[in-house]
Image 1 (cartoon, one colour):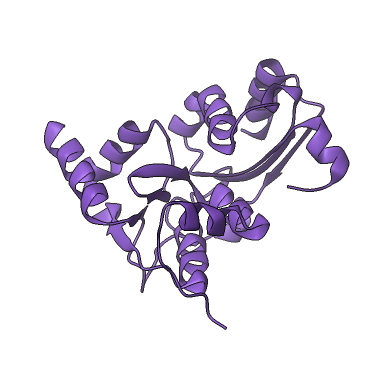
Image 2 (image 1 turned 180 degrees about the vertical axis):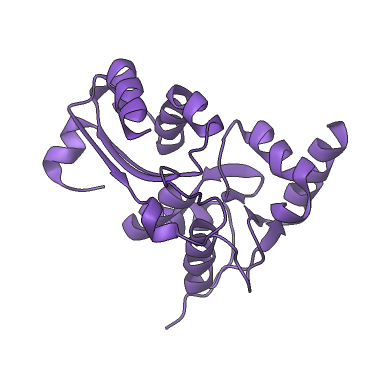
Length: 111
Length: 92
């Protein structure tokens, strides 16, 4: 339990943008995870994908950590942003780009 | 299951609009899908209770009301949460 929390914290400290997801960025195993990967890729955001399917304790641990019952979960600079619906809404409205700018995350949108 | 979701959200949020679509058929063969469906839902809620709440807070509210249903087989919820004002503007 503590180990899982430490593992999560360490991922968040090491990587500016972390996506806890089902599958990997190259092979997402859930449509909602795939949708978030697509948004991040489209924006050219470098992110660390953490596959929760590889570790049942992590899959449960991340839900407790954020008090959020579903996956995917996007974190920017250690802060929970939201799941698939929220990320998509924020991308469409431009708020996600603003958040990344505010947090000092460098990204290069595809032309 | 759709009725359970409807009852819980109606009681918990007194929504102005509540649309629940069972999307399960679209996920046949995918992880989390079960024969009989009722695993994937698309939920659109318009409620005054969301006013002044962040997106995360709004969805947490919905997830909390549906904790039992999520435990009992609802695998995925796609949520749209709006205040009556936002719905009237047709934006967000």
